[in-house]
Figure (tube, rainbow, N blue to C red):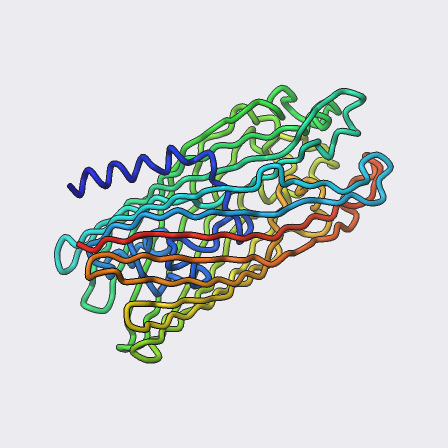
Length: 420
């Protein structure tokens, strides 16, 4: 019975994958699992359900035998304004696609007092913009290029193994098996201008996909009966190349998923109140397609080349704090997170298509214990509107000026957990 449920739930995210596009910390999700998301994504030292391995695989040792299945509705609002350019000036709304649905699934089982296994299936994040008319149409030399936008989705399947050193301390490892898919439309003018190593593999080639793998390590330990600490590190996830976009992404279509690491603590202030905080660092700059600045183009590095231009994102620090309070059959949650701005002011032009600029996020959540074996959890997330105004962001060869990009987000999630 457990194996049948596991197989069914593992297929479900693949069926729903085309709707995934969750991005709060750059293009990473702010948390994994509805419970964690309701506390601003904290979880390095506070495992709460079988999605714990997505944040820290050592948590697999502390959540018991359980099965969790959830779905999050995500609605971003994003767009751009171009000023001071004789060809491109205007305001552009990227919200032709507004609603996205992101599934999640987790399963854990304690094999012995010391060993536990699990699997977490979740959307790592993504980016999506959909302009009714491409903002770059005026550069198309009179040709009709229609709509424009980008769609990146990433799915992780992470089997985990955790070992309890003793009652209070555990180590864990997860293998991150990843699938991603991507398409971009409406950027043909850059290929036509001979800016690409492979113009035919630059834009409007429908979806391409790739698979890859990485690893995550973690530690969780109770220092005192009331204080728990945790640490986690995830390697870069090494992905196959997007061959259909080998003329767009640096390194001939390479688009790996950056490494990240973090530490956390959880303090049980009273029997009812728990306060937890996480620090995370995401290494966007180590992936050329994400971190290379667009300025590389001006020094002779064409799109798709080894040192070709990218989105120019910086590495970011993420700070999260959350609290939970239990009242009878209910556990109430809330949290706040802050992330550094990944997009510098001189890199806004290409990021018209990837305006992952939000920085301040608040969350609310709750769990209702329906019985000893079943619980229903909910979360709401709001990422406040943020605007990055460009500074010398459009090159003189395209007329100069600046691109200003903006975004805010809302999401609502629900999950059901079974305890065995």
